[in-house]
Length: 232
Image (cartoon, rainbow, N blue to C red; front, side):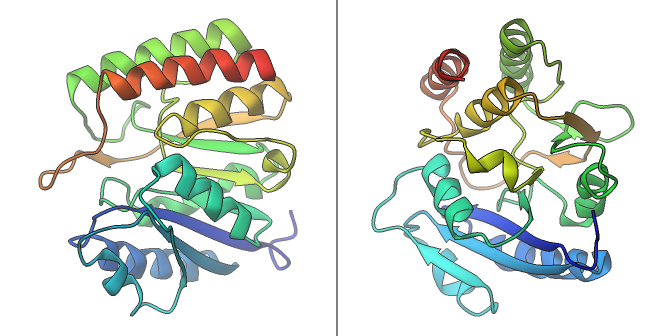
């Protein structure tokens, strides 16, 4: 890709992350300057009831807020619709992902080696701090995706991703919650786009409360994988 012409969109969904969102935005800005690419930051506030929205307003970004709390998947879909970039990156706002690893996640796309890049918590030399239940669940989802699509990945649920705009063009994403990552991955695989992973660091949140319910959201993820495979 001609890097001088690329516009990079960073989409960050936010729900009650007042302790981290300002820091994440600042670090993303620094990381993007280091890439040398034209860029925009899009923050989608999923109707936070803390000070997340107020903090984000002071950071000179494209900011949108939902009329009601609808979930991560819905927030990301709004972000994809608003994004103008040729390449779109998503990362979480709770501090679990390092913006400093942005260039590592982007590199396979910039080198024309991939259409979707997943930042994997489980590859090689990077440190991992994830709950055992999460690890088990991710392994189960990875296996099901491999069975249905033939695509083998180590971290199908990672929210740190980079993708070319064209892979979203014909995808009719329907997920409202955390199952968005699985739906997107399966539909991308069914269209025969190139998918690869790069190792990333990951730090499990040590404050606040995760919105993920292992049982309810796990079931939704399983359904989204099967449904996305059927719909293609």
